[in-house]
Amino acid sequence: MFKKILIANRGEIALRVVRACRELGVRSVAVYSDADAMAPHVRAADEAIRIGPPPSSESYLLGDVIVEAAKRSGAQAIHPGYGFLSEREWFARAVRGAGLVFIGPSAEAIGAVGSKTAARELAVAHDVPVVPGTTQALADAREAAAIAERFGYPVLLKAAAGGGGKGMRVVRAPAELAGALDAARREAKNAFGDDAVYVEKYLEGPRHVEIQVLADRHGTVLALGERECSVQRRHQKMIEEAPSVAVSSDLRRRMGDAAVRVARAAGYENAGTCEFLLDRDGRFYFLEMNTRIQVEHPVTEFVTGIDLVQWQLRIASGEKLPFDDAIEPRGWAIECRITSEDPSNGFLPSTGRIEHLEVPGGPGVRWDSGVEQGSVVGLHYDPMLAKLVVWGADRATAVARMHRALLELRVDGIETSRDFHLRVMEDAEFRKGEIEIQWLERRLPSLLEARSSKEERRVAAIVAALLAERDRADRAGGESRVPRETGPAAGAATGRPDLSAWAQLARREALRDS
Ligand code: MV4
Image 1 (cartoon, protein in one colour):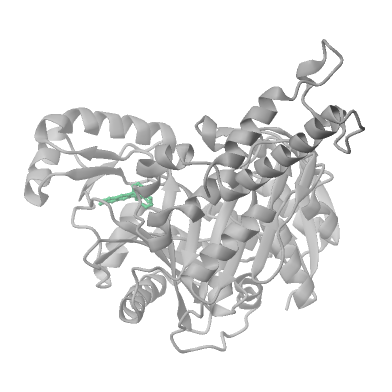
Image 2 (tube, helix red, strand yellow):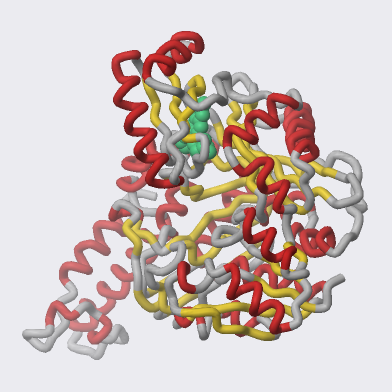
């Protein structure tokens, strides 16, 4: 095992890697930008090195600076986390070139599945189903029309270099094709510097299901089951779970075999994920392979009992995977991504200081966070503050536990996605597992106007009771135990806080039937 590694990331994933290091007796070196000088991941690591000013482009994305920091610190390996440099082929090569170990797949394996069309061709060559379509870049609208005719409308134009839904256009009729092709090309050119676009048949309302893979350098490639990631908005996942209600043992085995074939064909080593679309008839289609540890890896850890980040380090140091059989999930895990976004305001990023933080705990609860009370949340990095992950014996138990854990969570000072997640946990369709990739966007309006959660009503009832107590005390001419200075500043002019607006709201909320 390594004696010391450098973690080329920040926030919750950097802290997650520090924890794995400590359990393995490996020394950890954090890197940080000026915005993160006091961050939890920096204090948690054994050593820390400043790499630049707050913008990622001048800090966490500077591969050379990070490799230099690793060499200077005496680290033997670099863990890239997710995002930033984690899937850059050139970075994996630069790390190796500096005589260090990249904790992830080889540069060649990243290259083999890095482009959408390359991964698609690899899959086809190894009997892994893909959505019907082509891989060749379209020459012009005439060729696009001919191919669309062959597969039938609706079709989806996709950027070959694509990712995150950029350069994608649904085309429902021939008349829309030329315009959509221009738009897809322009977007692809802007985002990836490559305007190659190809055609697939468009699938309506599939689920997004992915398979976790672990591969060592001794020829063992394992599929560790699926994650259901359909609850997403604009290609940002909000909630993930393992297993998926839509995946039987038999389907799990077939999807796992397909993922293992892709990983083997790519010469894959370390942790990776194969993404699939799963249609209503249980047919699955390979989309792409992610060559990093993913945000949602804890749900797989909960249901398999396997520490994926520890295994990333073990594999990179040459250990052999000791498991060989197909692993069946035990129980159910759900993750909510707690972000500094305001769901009632179009998910606008919210910034400021976390004035007060109460973190959930108790049975089956995991809180992976890169922030703490007092942290200042700005706009330089991803809005994900923390991942709240729970485990339960079955899905209903896990949903109830997530609801309870969200009730325990309190973040003051910035807006977060917490209330939105509470409402999803209360939603009848979600509770039945009736979700697909368009579910959230379709249901968002009704989720946001859903009546306030039970907890809000409880708080309101308490406020109403306190106010009633004060009114009684006023009438009796006595001194109330409810202090007046806790009210809003509305009464500043009179010197007496005016609580009437709160009182009205509280009574209305408290009188709603539960
Ligand atoms: C699709 C599709 C429907 N039909 N391909 C979106 C990003 C990229 N990774 C692939 N994506 C999709 N490809 C065909 N032929 C629908 C999506 C899609 C999607 C996929 C996974 C997770 C979220 C999604 C949200 C919208 C569309």
